[in-house]
Image (cartoon, rainbow, N blue to C red):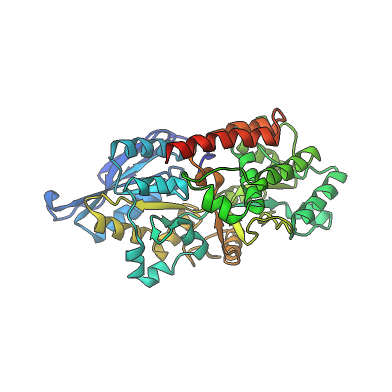
Length: 441
């Protein structure tokens, strides 16, 4: 998805025959990895592979995975480009404009992935999966469906992600609180906490992402699924005028007006907000599942979690969970499609995904990759939980067209700060939707 990963310190990774240096993951780093072989250089196939997993422990694991693949496929060389979340989005956008996309590359679901498909740079993987039912059935259904577009499968899910509430178990136990089933249950929890001098929610919207994640999850609960995902996640039909959008913002405004958030959240950066959470402030935070390991370390394991509760009287699909996995695309215009598909199949195999969970601390979209032996209990439990949902409702910032997302972020912070009303906020987004529709007719 998106956004919010802190920069890491300078890494130097020593490899066989080469050195790959990553300066705070701030730039693009390219290397060819693999064992030497007797295959002539001219006979080798080179696959370019772009990913964004540049934090300590991640880079080394992906390098080793590629090395191991090359050892078993001496005719293949893999040229890796590793960079940050935001930087890879910029690089891919430039590559899309110049028609020089890599063979296998990082993606997010929804409109983000679909724009590559419209340009002819995302291979439909459905025929390959249909020919290998074991491979196809290895994915969590909710994750797999995140990259299904009509009859096509333009990418495969890799790292699972969703947005859930984490709570301090010790605080809930102290006040006799249980995980909520409905929004009303959650509000009662908040009132009990506030009455006892405990801040219900910690939130940091300084980078303009956190509040829109709340908005998106509330919209998913309040806007009919066919409108949100069928109409408004389509650049040709997006309007954003369903009354459910205002309802979702009203729910958020209620939480804000009741004083259930920590003060000054609009200027507090996400990671700094979590540091205050770890240090003792607040009872709950709305976070991504990919942050579970950090939460576990910050709270010494003292946390449970629950998804956005149900809204009994609203029109959204209450059976879905908000979020979407990250994924990988095979370039349909690659000169080495078959080899690229084979590499992606290897990357999404159970053994490799177990390795990524254990060593890179990933959250896998493959059934059985996350176990009690290689992950914290909460990650095992959250993967069990998603089996009970009918699907995933995409991140709003991935489902909506990028220029609308820009408005959503900027004006969303203005709404949070009380400078504009919910109606004014949605009017700005609707104006952006008109521009997007007009430019895609």
